[in-house]
Length: 292
Image 1: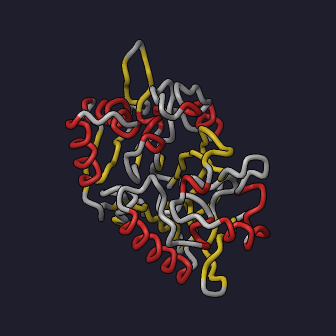
Image 2 (image 1 turned 135 degrees about the vertical axis):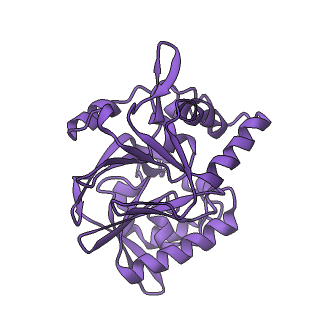
């Protein structure tokens, strides 16, 4: 994604990984291959890999420069993270910090990290490994998390669950709490810059989307409310990664209709480049129109 504008805001994208990631029949419990065949013209090789049939995903952060603050929205997979059950992303060494620098921002210049939720692929660069310890990657940033989301994963951590999400809470969330840099907020939290949370539960119990408003323009960072453009065609499809499939479906269908009605610019967490775009009505369903 080329840097884009939301009114007076500049938005860049930093990706840890982009490529074939998941088999659609495994990722979507309700998957119907006929939907892919019937929509081949809009899916194509950019969204479904022709060699493997896998969904093409991107794992990225957004960097929002409001003119007052530099704000990261989600922080990808991270470096050196122990994720043995995710071998494709286990102990990665991506060029994230160098890529951030190419956007003109050093780690010390990030003011806020806003988390849509606390899954392993959204909090990884909250910390980095230094001399065998996980330390905050962004030393001057406040890390903003929904209070309900944090409480859920704190309980998972206390139970000792052995999952990538539980591991991420330990190595990518708790260190920023210990450093005093975390800020736990309600799901209607707002920054005066023009960004605010809205509760969007289902994918996780405390999941939020992040709205942006500047210069008369509106956009929304939807995190994992939408994983793939297939979910615009079939918004009723929840994923195996959703903690509450029925609630996730309800939230997604409501928001897809709302964003289509308002022609809101949508920035999802996993759509491949060019990533940003609009949800458009198409008959009795929807399609995603990328902002090229």
